[in-house]
Image (cartoon, rainbow, N blue to C red; front, side, top):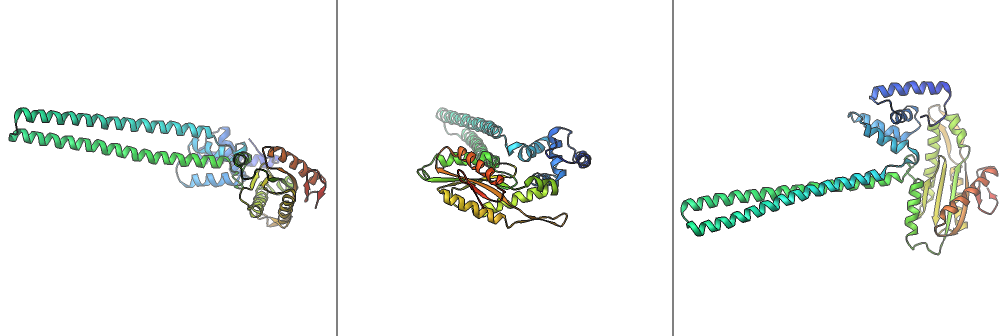
Length: 352
């Protein structure tokens, strides 16, 4: 269950700390529970650590469902949430609500029918016996009782409808949240691969960019493995977050898409941008990242500047965007081979 290679000494110490922490938290000794606590103890997953800390601080016992939710959000590959499970749950709960409303409505209808028949019976009784004091008192008492009964039944139905609406609203919010989380990378808050694909499908379904050019950029942090191996995954995560912030600052046009598509690899899709504009954006990003100086805070040690290599491809806006990503990726590796910290346009040489 170790996601990242460690030395034997480090692995043994982490293993000891994981078992100790699992015991303290009352976790089961299952692969999922172990994976969650391993990432927590080793400090390689800030999002997971924050989520687990929040649950622990709440003071409530952690359930298997809580741990599984954290595992699916922060450990499972591609950060894929079981959306189908959410949809199934939503369908099931709404069905239960509808059945409850149906039962309440039916009960109220039956009560109304009973009161109607009672009124008819009271009328017939009046015609038959006349309006003496005893009959009048019995009639008033019966009508009052039936009025209160139908009022209570109607109030119960109204309450059920109100509570059901609240429940449906809550389920809808949970589903929207789950869908959004399944499309977002937890570390950087950029789109993940799934989110990028969903966003492109949405763009392709419209006509806003038809007939225009589109530029695709693939970006990869230079010597990232060395950063991780030398300074640890916490520093590696810090580098990834720093790059994501630069991308967010540089990419501001509506419709532009920014995604983290691998460990240290990013993708930009710029609808409406020409090859020249795509190259210009790549250089703007590259030069901005070149100014970042990474620091290992725990060791109070300056690591140095960080660089990034970029590949660019441009073509008419259309459904072949994934093929454009592949071509941009090939250009990216040409940038790596040419010495890194440079931009290469597909079909052309690398340019510093």
